[in-house]
Length: 150
Image 1 (cartoon, rainbow, N blue to C red):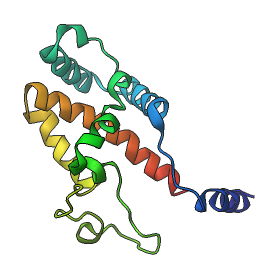
Image 2 (image 1 turned 120 degrees about the vertical axis):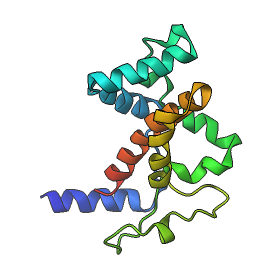
Image 3 (image 1 turned 60 degrees about the vertical axis):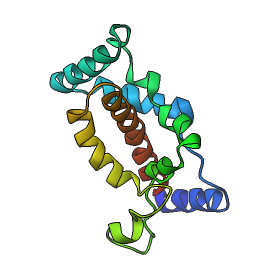
C-alpha cells in the first residue's frame, strides 16, 4: 500500500514544478526547531538578537524564517544556496558535481550550511544576524528537499 501511495504521489508531482514551503512552512519548521533548542543554543541566539536590537531578544525564529527567500531576488549569488540537486541514480553526494563553487548563482545548500556554522559562531553584528537568518531558512529548505525525495 505504501508503494502504491508513493507511486501516486510521484505521478501527481512529476509533471509539475516543485513548490517551496512558502512563509507558513518555513515558520512552522523554525518554530519546531526553536522549541527543540538546548539551553546553550537558546542563549547564543538570544545574544545574537540582543546585539542587533534589545527589541529582538524574545523574537521567534519563525519571524524571519522566510527572509532568505525575500533576499534572493536581488542577490542572485544566493540562488543555489536553497537546494542541492543530486541525481536519483547517484548513491552518494559529489560536491564537484552537485555543488560547483564557480556557479555565478552560488554553490549549494550543503556548502552554505557548512559556512554558516562558522559565521553564526564567529561573525558579529549584522553579519552574524544574517548568518542566523540564512541558517534558519536553510534548515527549512533542506527538510523540504528531504520531503520531496519520498
